[in-house]
Image (cartoon, one colour):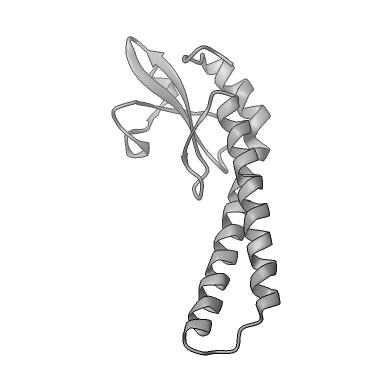
Length: 134
């Protein structure tokens, strides 16, 4: 992992290592959200004197813990490669760099083939610029 600044080639190499992990994290996040939604619905029914299967709540709590641990492992793998997660749902990943003296990020979003964008650290995704400008 570069010490705080990636060249474009280094960012692309790191992306090759973590691309699948980003997708896994997105899937884990979606599954975790579904479990939380079901737990919330079951708990609302329980509060309204509804019949709630304690067994199902225990299963969902176990699944929530498992998914949370899986998400933490994925996050650790991505950040351990030096990348910064800017949005799990969108798969937004930034690699710190300096471009022409400006603190910046090489920017990638899940679904894109390659790192083709960058932006100053003072702007977010909306400030993306094509790397052909560099």
